[in-house]
Length: 239
Image (cartoon, rainbow, N blue to C red):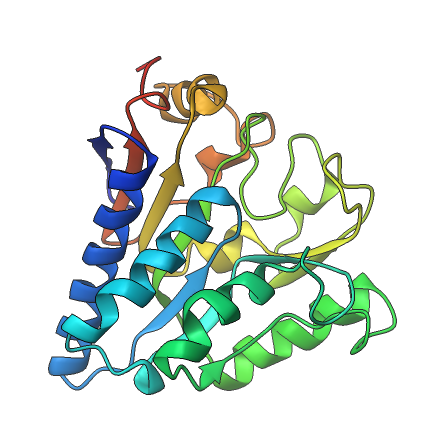
């Protein structure tokens, strides 16, 4: 796995613009080489800012979003179309406007009986339509060091399948579906997107020379070719 690289921007707005621009460049380069890239999106405030920048910058890029395969690292197990779902914002903010058609949402409560069934369906979707690895996985990081819906000390951390149902999440809503460490680590590039002083301790713990992914789950994910921590000044303040 690649050693992590750290890129610091002055604020959240600059961070979102930098990430969106880099992602569009990466996707355009992949498509120019004849490759159809697979990207796993994330949720949260900084992700929503990145989505807005992707919508703004896409018209000036060479990216054909109909040739990008879109996944999510995790999803809240709530009703389809709920504002709590990561997919709801992403579709409205940029996926639908830019014409993305290969979008694989994690099942909602309308689609599966429970989180275990939803995780099984999503895992099968990845097996059937995935490429064996993701080109880029985007991940936010919580103040507790969680990534996707893998929380410190939670049994889901030790699941070695593709997707896992999470119950009793310490952050509401309590039921979620998440890709596992094993699935996210089958990625060419992993990009962490972190903004705000409240995340600074988690960033420092994740990047410390020693530590346990059970205590700081962000330590458990890295890209085969590249791992980048995109931080704003406040998030990087403890490094």
